Amino acid sequence: MLLAACGKGAATLSSEPLAPVAAQGAVSVVTRNTSRIGGQRPAADAAAVARAVYPGLTAGSRPQAVVLVDEHDWSAALAASVLAGAPVGAPILFSEGATLPDVTRQAIEALHPRGLPALGGVQLIRLASTARVPGMLATRTIPAQAPAACARALEQLLASIEGAPPTQAIVVPEGAPRALTMPAAGLAAESGAPILYVEHARVPAATSTTLASMHRPSMYVIDPSLVSARVLSALRRLGRVTTVASTPAAGPRAAAVANAIAIARFTDGSFGWGVKEPGHGLVFANLARPLDGPAAALLSASGNYGPLLLLAGARSIPAPLAVYLGDIQPAYTSAPAYRPVRGVYNHGWLIGDESAIAGSTQAEIDSLLEISPSRQSSEEAQSEQNG
Image (cartoon, rainbow, N blue to C red; front, side, top):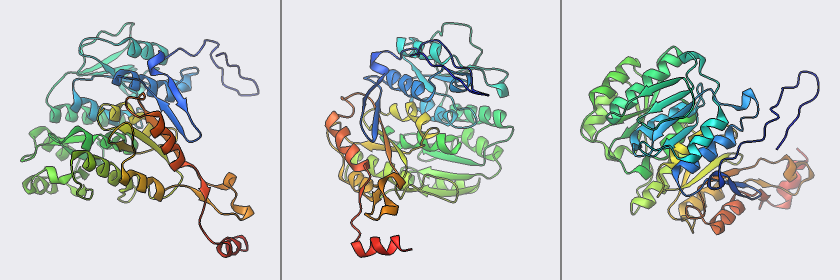
């Protein structure tokens, strides 16, 4: 692919071809309202997301920095999601222990990060990863450590970049099922609020110290049923606490699906998605692949910005999710002033290959996102047309 630019003030585009993401990391299926990205492994999914957001053909289409996380450290990967949002905008890429997958290496080389001025030109933030990265990249390393301490290190890094501590935080129970906390990745990326960890019965010292340094922040607790009243009380002494909870569901998979919808709907002033009407980007992942949450966080903080929604299996859409998508499905009336070209639209990013989300499921999601004629009566349409 060769691109050229012309016209006064036009950006200079690279004459180099767009570097491949490898077969398993490329966009595989695009429909009217959905785009599928990724492959069989978290590393492929993360690399494909990174290349979709940062094609790397101009300085502006390259990230300032990339984050490399060991995929075996779930808490570090989830907490790192905040760096996918402003002001860093860093893709989350994965190593496999001390091994750097080819797809990750190719992505780093193709993205060629510009350097983060606030950190003295750092190009690579290495988090709990010992994999060797080829080339001479300016690197900041955060070693593997306990979840609360890792989250504190990331909050301190974010504060040093922004010049002030964050005013909001997302609180996640450390022992929570991963599927329940997956959507926190996109929420952190969109809001810029760091993810902090608590245990069921206590607030770790690292988390208490972090919250104290944030000077009474607003805290949003994901699935408060997994923490004790004592923990919530301790948090309230450190700032304002708001819980984000879903309707109780039968079984862990149903609970994870419902929790993702609750987070997508949730809003508190300027915080939260508040997706309750048409006209949004949405990200879909299989709850059996939790690392796809951090991998896709960049899509929640760029492009058409969307919350993460979860499928309980590859071959079907859970009923509550179908209902939710029906609630926010775009529609238009028959009145000329309200033709589809003047409507709002939803778009879905699907993460992973067909073992994660089957082609038939993608087709169903596409239909649920499609703008369609509304059911309003001809009298209502005429009334709207006449003002």
